[in-house]
Image (cartoon, rainbow, N blue to C red; front, side):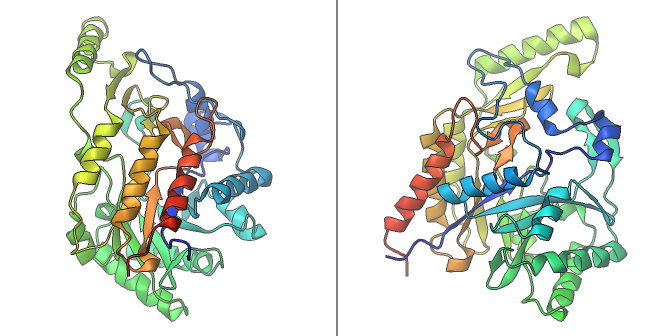
Length: 378
């Protein structure tokens, strides 16, 4: 029996190396590991901090780390990494790991890009309105961007759908003339000898468009990024009471200094999965599922969202169910995204940690084995 065509693609954060901009904004030598180490439990049974396992607090400029990551991914059935790509008007941030991958041709592991096209702010320490570096979308920058991307798309490891390079855009609604940009990009890539593009709009918390509206803008598919506010279950009443009590005490003692009183909104992972899986499949557009092993951005934010999951089998069931939802798509388009390979400060990682080890990776492998043993939909 031939292996299942369903591919798992894990979002990959290239943050774990110092850059001059982060030195200036957050302090010399800053990487996200500094946030990860600061994580503290906020309630009984809260799993914080997340401590990395066998890979340690790595630096992504170390080629042996990138090779070990790819080796783990291959071993357990992750088919590709989707690197976050930070482009700000021809200025790239956090690009050195990808540059090294391109220059060295190592690791020999498939990848694609997701353009994280949103402003960088001081949201981590409560300064959501303080912009560190802004996106300024315009036609000239669109041209410069696609010219930079075309050589990347030509890399033999780059993920292709129907021979078209796969490219994700995180905030389609933030681009004033996204339809015009997409049209210009498609024309330029075909002129360059590529077989067009396979463009995905990421539908996250921030998306203002419905799936069909995104397809009408010129996208080929929508990635149903999770966790998403629209799928959050009702927070337990007793947790709400605790949270509101903390806020009231903080307001009474410290005015409106929100960051002085850390609080967490806590949601049930199993209930969220049920809500996501209960949504009907919209046959009018191509929606690609996204799953996550666990979620907890306590290490980054004073006001955090916790969707803790210490039962890897639940994640495996969600991944398998999501895979079945794409099994009727054309083989090249049978994809499930995983958030994420290494979002450590959001408690959201397939990479092994000291508590769970390789348990979530094991679930990916089990799902792949199950899919390979199932009969194909013809």
